[in-house]
Amino acid sequence: MSITTGGAPERRGAAPGPMRGGGANLADVARLAGVSRATASRALSGRSAGKTAAHARVVAAAEELGYVVNGLARSMMGVGRRSIAFISSIMVGPTFATMAGGAEDIATANGHLFTMCTTGGDIERESALIEALSEQRVMAVLLVGSTPATKEFEQRAARYADTLARVGAQLILCGRAALPDLPQIASIDYDHRGGVRGAIAHLADLGHRRIAFVGSLDEMTTSHQRFLGYHDGLADAGIDLDEALAVRSGNTSEEAASAALALIGSRPDVTAITCQTDIMAVGVCRALREAGISIPGQVSVVGFDDMQLVADLTPSLTTVRAPFHEVGEIAGRIAVGEPYDGPVVLPTEVIVRASSGPAPV
Image 1 (cartoon, rainbow, N blue to C red):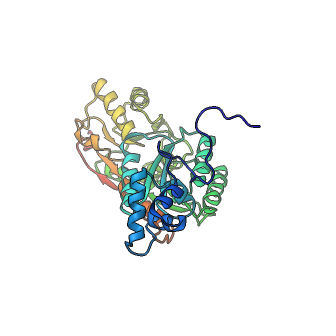
Image 2: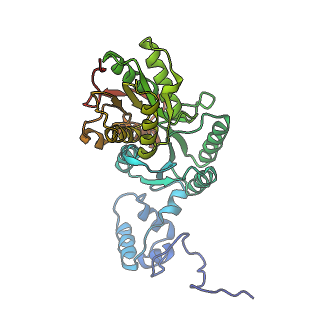
Image 3: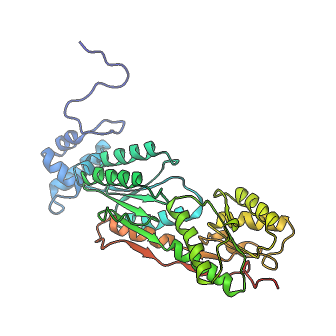
């Protein structure tokens, strides 16, 4: 003897997944239309040949009964619309939103759903998301943003790729360099290192020799590549690296403002500051203004990302533009089936505005 509490008793033969309030299933539709379940299924999935009388009866019966095709069940059987998932640690600022927009444009144009998920930097949550998405027969997962440059991440990525491959899906890294030992995992990135290198070249051309860097200075891929670009730019200009001018800050304007004030207090000879992100650059500019230091008269400031708001600052911010939308578009095209011919690294561009000027004499 069994006891069921709450809800209606289970119906034998009912279609899997959630049902509308009326509870109609495929068998009900077939019965009302006077066709077999197979015929009804083909008609509702768009696989029936032509718009026959039977097809019309099935559609009319489905509308009358309020029957809705179970999209999840269809995707799990390898038919119908499948989703493309965008996973990031946090949805911060317009950069990831722009990348997501590029991927969503391609997904929706090809008739697929687009899902956005965040992990909060929790590896267990990330792993659980990948597992859940594979169970739902996702088409592709776009893993977005900076990651630790460690063997542990490579092993984790390999595990994710294997999990997704079992359901015919793929893992695509966005804004993260390729993993040489895992060429089957697609990578769409942009030139972090070259972007900062170009920013330093711009400042050096303006006569700056004491150029500081404000960044997280950790081993995450994005921050590490951008810091290497700082090294490259100094070397290109024949400027010796002064480790005291590399200042650690979290990626908030408040932390960057505090870091900049401490820097200027200890090194008043600094004439330019390049920042790992525009968010940091906004904080640096605020700190300099509050300290009565003119930009760029006394200190030039350069950011990275070209967030939309930075063109409207006073002075407008010189920065490095990254092709976030294009990264998302390319990842989206690979997700829907375009061939992947190897890692993609898109160029960045230094956008010169009013926050950078000649070094003071």
